[in-house]
Amino acid sequence: MLDFILGKDIAVYVRRHRRLVVCALALTVVSTLFVVIPAYLIKPFVDEGMKSASETVSWKIPWIAFDHGSVFSWHLTHRVLVENISPTRLLVILVMVTFVSVLIKSIALYLSGLAAAAFSNRAVRSLRVDLFRKFVTLPLSFFDSRKSGELVARATADLAVMQG
Image (cartoon, rainbow, N blue to C red; front, side, top):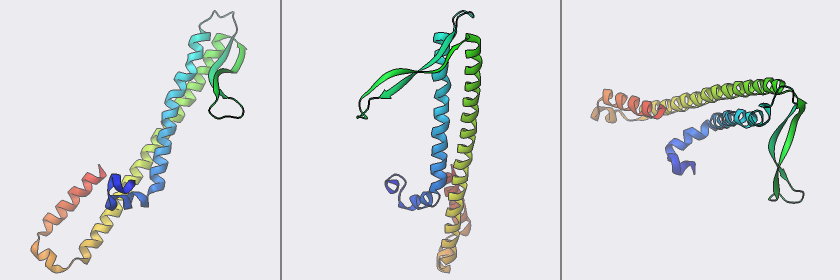
């Protein structure tokens, strides 16, 4: 599949550094999940936390429960995380959870960017090394018929396009 999408020549360089690609993709998925979590967790505050300060509230989130014996049989339920606390305390807890979620999202996104940049740099470096090896093995007659400046300019421009 990778050969079909990128072509056989480029897929070789992606396969050499597949751990970095998988790491970057996994960290991107984690950061995306932690974008959704604060919105999912703030819903109970909007529903329950807006009551008067004298009333106690419970922090319930929607949950999917699977019936025993079948993976495809499920029903929507609620899971209680915290019971009988003041709305102010619920707000403090939700702010802390949201802060931690945003922090994890930011760290995962930063590390994902580092992994993607490391992959890009390593793949282009491998391409440059292979191109240099190819130039070194070419016969001298190849260089007689072409200008060396054109070869270097084309190689540099093509590799710059590959790096993005």
